[in-house]
View (cartoon, rainbow, N blue to C red):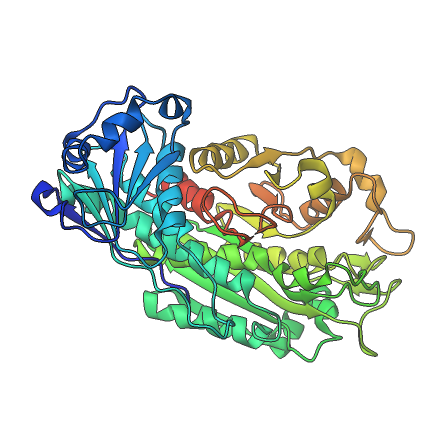
Length: 489
């Protein structure tokens, strides 16, 4: 998998600044006040920094923006990056500052003079997240970034604060890699194998094959994958870091490794992006990896359904009726509304087996949520106000956009079937809501539940503040924060 850049924290050594090669970065607040590190760079560069902070250009700079001085006199460095960042900067601003530095790094070593800035760990975290690149399938040699050193007043204290963030970065990278992989590489077998390898981290991983799924009655899930040569699977990942009697949080992910739409085949334009239709399962995997790496003090189970939706002589057809593990019958109106069939069985299985304290499912479920919210927010649906509020608070704290959407009995009539208990599609009106309403049918009474429709946020068409174009890893930070705040004792 892609490995986050190694970031070392060292005690500030101003005498070493003149000989530091690569790029040197300094932090300057809105008033233009230079800290000791910036003053040393200013003296070495014969007042170059002072001239910048006295300029109108600096006055117009926003938090986390950077001015670069190329080949500064008096330093061995090829560039000095002056970052505007107040001491009272927000977490988001500090992480964006780190990300902006990462975008400029290239092959160069980076020395950041962070002094006693209270957000030094967040700056480093933003740097790590933005330094991601996915080069597994390029012929040319990838750019190997240089060493990154953050000079601070109390390196051990900052390194301790940065430790859990390093675990988070690895979890985000794992999710991004999975979403970025093409479907001919990330088959259901390969996906399951990558999850099984996390047993080395202390996770308990179990892979349920098709014969076991048939015995369990997961006919809805199996129907989605019956047109594919790749076998359908369910993978269970367990992290038991809490008390033995603590009911776990269950994270459930849709893992459609490629979605043609099946017999209700999608238009050809843009179909190549359907390699990301396993994004929900990827986020669950990234969260489980993070929890194991940081030794979370909570019990969490991740359950993902891995299938491929292909057109074939054996593929399910519009008009088919399948019986779910719960026992409800489902009329298949559109084979491209397949994710909810996968989740119906996996949600019921997770509840039946683990009796969780709460359930959160994630899926790139509907294009309708993109119509409603664009690419800035995931859609959040829930049957429990307190649970939902805690998640939204966690998402806001971590800077991951999320917006609550409605549920209600009035939407049930839209998915009522003439022939079965329920139908899997009601057409365009309220498409993301009827999909969530469908899933709610497979949530046991009194079980707190959140459904996250991440279709608009899993894969970015343009770079974001903390990620290059492509897979974002959205959700790993928010869910890890929710676990820490609500479930760790």
